[in-house]
Length: 322
Image (cartoon, rainbow, N blue to C red):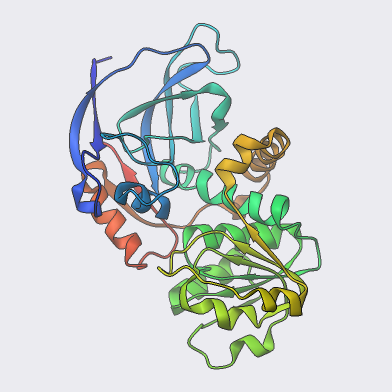
């Protein structure tokens, strides 16, 4: 193995264009860690926030962005058991915009044999967010109605897939015919164009999965049943809604914040349940593969982030080194 590897580096905060390709020195493994040759890395909305300095976790400059990857184990610490060099894995991790990374062995999941590297890399973040949101925080049950906003993006499609697997009736809201078709393929029973006037009058949702925020909030709120649960997942729409407390009171609704990574770190029971849930998802559902919207070379990371920021992607974008 060489002593240097390539990675996309953030030396100053800003737009995606601040990313630059750099060579970094390999770090020694600590107990419990493995070194992974990255075959693909997922591109996610939090990456944009992190590069801009707007994400809740702010690593010191300079840093390598990215939160998920898939690849092959090329080295293990002496105390690591259950994994060996050559194993194909995927994981939620930091610093994934790189040719290689070091991560705890406990974070690894096995890559399904039939999945591409891109599909494997596009799975961990969206799937874990959907799992924590719907099943842990949202308590979604079979037979309930789930409304998914932003259903054509990677996180939205994961929520549609998991909701359908859970036995909920899934209603998808997505801004283009292509995105609505993808949501239907993922398991939505009804797909809605948010530009359609009065669409909310025909929907009564027990749970709303909202990674969008922005201008759709007041309209979609009217689609929530009395006693329903609204899951605040993110603000890809650009604006942060300011719900009025009287609306919560009148509907006797729950407004629930979702931070999947923080929940898994803070609540061991959540981490254990999510790990098993994701393993079951990987093993048991051929329909659970992420839809890959585009593949960029590592050095094209800024272009991938720009496409995501402009909300032009249907499904997941990934980077592939080499």
